Length: 115
Image (cartoon, rainbow, N blue to C red; front, side, top):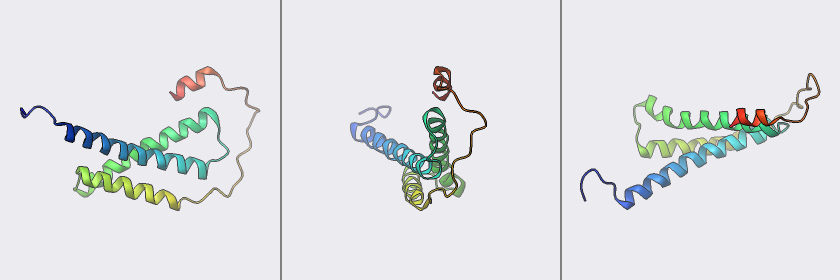
């Protein structure tokens, strides 16, 4: 095989790594939003989930980079550690904040902004 081609095994291993890292970040986002902000619904909930998941993806890659050990294995290890750390997130004790004004039905524009 020429050096510029990737074998099937390497290709599938790369996709498995991507699935593990993104799955770990999605798990972290879902757990944090569900436990800390259970009163959110609709577009605000989706937006908070997206922000937490993106932050988790950044943390998974930047932590090994800052330690000077960035590799596929350390990224996978950081993803596993983050998924395990989200188990320690405690549920929110405070009640949801009172809305300033009664919100109307969510508009299509709010979902476009979330996307």
